[in-house]
Image (cartoon, rainbow, N blue to C red):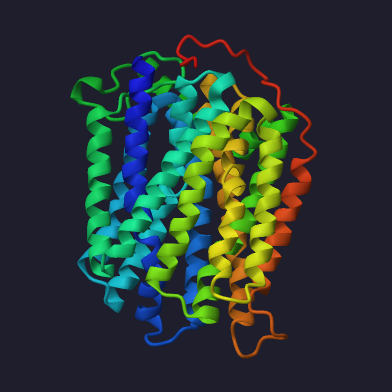
Length: 440
């Protein structure tokens, strides 16, 4: 019962945080265009800056997310969760105050820095928290429910943005982000992999100062456990399913990054979409994702396994990108999200496969490594797809195919799909018994 209560508080925390951060997604394209290229529907500068920011964030997150995940195995999930949730407030507060060009550039710089810490870390720590509380047998379903909560936050945040002015959107977003941190600090209980008290709390009072050489040596040992490339190599060498999940995560993130860098600007240039139309489209995507993860993932994962769900999701993702790339009318992007009912199951399936390959004391490290690989893909993705998007949306395109970059992203996901069908089974590499697990 205590584990169930802890999970409920975690879900509320993730919902509030997601609601705050997702509210700005439909509006940020218009804000960027207005600040950089007022009155235009096509702006190469906005595309390149967005891609550059995505690459910078990916570079930082590739280093920081595995570090945060690994340190949470030592210091606890809640202690480390405080950092990314707190810093994510700052860029939202800037746009809540003003969206003039100077403030937009301040937002751009600050978000590029803070997202290195928050991008991926919140999800990584939430997954590790769930793994602490749920047995291996039920973990895929639990990860799906966590993803469903995040999708529900996406729906609510997008719906709120649909009916609020752009200025009000960021004001409410900043307030909800603060509320999420306050709720988490008050109600969420700390979690360690072994369920013991924290031996070396990261937030210390005066009574906790190091008093002996033994304590100092313990501190040195902690920093020796900071994740490195060697940790990733060790994990991939000792588990074929983990290495396959890591490879799939890379190509899937590469494709999703390409879609992110291309789609909104493609719709702006091709069909003159604005904030409200972006919100409507994202709302459809969010509803499909919420329905899928809360219903299909818990229902299908125990029956057909997460490896088959992964293949189905990737195949539907390919179809989604190909349809969007050849969109011939403004209604097509609204119909394409039907494929997202299964596409959204890709990430929970990857995370569940990875989680089963490590022990209870390595969940933060494993989830952090997968997040780091995804972040590495996010570095490469804008370098590949942003120039393609800008080129094929410009008047100097080699041939008339505005959605060419989106189709290229689809072919990238095909590689992930081919790899996924090579996963024959995902046995757990560790014992499933856990006194602190929540049995269904």
